[in-house]
Length: 91
Image (spheres, one colour):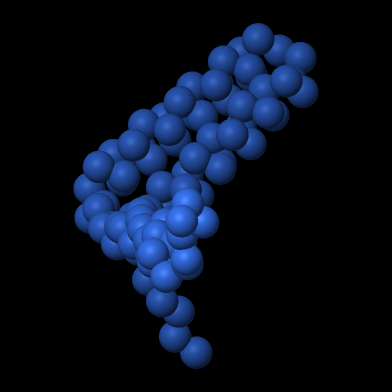
C-alpha cells in the first residue's frame, strides 16, 4: 500500500499542533530550564510552520457570494412581476 505524500500545508498544520502541545507541556514542568527548553522548541516549530506555509502554493477557492446574489435578485424580482398582473384597486 502506497501512502500519499504530505503537502506543505498539512506538514505546517502538524508542526503547529506539535508546538501547541509543547506549550501546554511547559505548564507541567517544575524546572525553569525545562520550561525554557520546551518554549524554545515550540517557537522553532512555529517558525518552521510559517516557512512551510509561505512556500506552499496558495489554493484559490471559487467565489461563493456571486450565486447567492443572483438568487436574491431573482427572489426580489418575482414579487414585482406578480404586482403588475394584479388588478389595481384604485379604480
